[in-house]
Image (cartoon, rainbow, N blue to C red; front, top):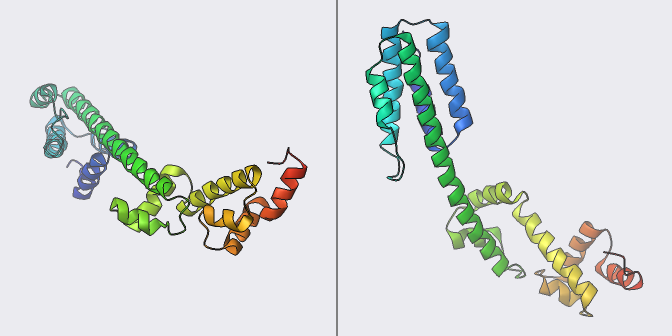
Length: 226
């Protein structure tokens, strides 16, 4: 009997929808090894196996956006003409290529969606970057996603947590104000989004190893300090 468990078919189609080509390729390679190599199935049984994989692909292609080509006529004809072991192998190669193409298309759409979402997130954050009321929950509500999802998405796309991003940008602005203005430290704290000068002071010392006042004094006496 050919090897194509129901749970594997489910995983294969779900991963293809998600555009996870590397994992899809691993499953397709396992199926090929089990059916074409290990079991040494006769052509009649191999045809049944290829037909079933083909059926999964047909069902999957019916869910694709209209701009995707789905299954082309070349595959249909190749599958219909299967007689020998070589025919089955050729048909399976075409099926693998179609899975790859669908994965790449799905991955491209996913990246496009991620880019659009990331732009919206960054715009929301930048618009309120120095507001002490800015929170992850506020941004999540504004762009209509869950706070948990946004937290994971932000870390994945930006390479740092939302909190780290906020602190880094606020500290950079604080440095600029300390260097270029005579604004009191407590006012700078409020200007860059901290509810109290104590909270700002602790954050500043944690990041730069000295108090904001000490930094200003040192920077003024030694212009090379950054």
